[in-house]
Length: 310
Image 1 (cartoon, rainbow, N blue to C red):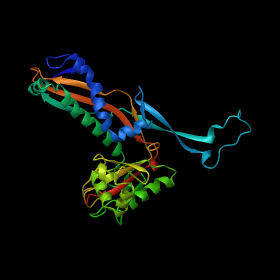
Image 2 (cartoon, rainbow, N blue to C red):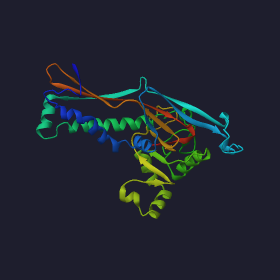
Image 3 (cartoon, rainbow, N blue to C red):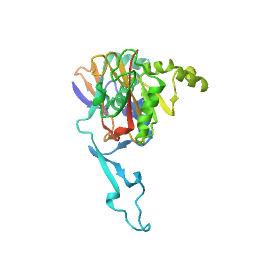
């Protein structure tokens, strides 16, 4: 197959169509990338040109016990008054991508209906949005909960393993929220699986809150907020079967975060598009890839909400 960059016209692709791909796909994916958008809107996505980036973190300071004292405003603070550390981001070997194959007959059929490349772009946008959120929400997931780099976790039920009937309750969310707050974090968002939301909708405490809040969940189909947390329902959180270490049945790991402290994302290039074309131009393989690195900046600013499916 002959490789062609998406700047080259062919019998089926015009230059104008190709030039608009990147913008249209990114625009279509934007509202679908929930976790990514939340981090980006809070300044936790950084763009640069180098493959390595060092994110500065204040790991300890005299602020914890009192500001350092100086004689006047012109006196310099000693360099050891604040302890700065860095988290290293690297996009080396971090490229992810996918390919959508389409035959010439199918492409021409779409164009005759006036669809052009819309269906292909929709597929690419959906795939990109889903993968970007999976990258974030499963970054530190672990079927062996105690082995996760996130120290805070609430395993629903009466013990440390997930069994049938270990479903999410409002009390579980409150406990996990308290864990983060005890470490001076301010939880802002909770990402849960649709089945975890279903479990919450059966909780009498949540139903009472819904009634007090004028049944927003009934009208919209979702629980929008709980305990001051924005609730995001998504299938992109980690899911497990009974083969996982701490799971004796199917289950999920929801993720609670302090958006200003938990995760950072570093990107150093735009999304890349290309087309592979057979010699007879009967099959097109449209490829998309991107490079980014995701790091947990503060392990105390995230928590796992672990439950069974039923």
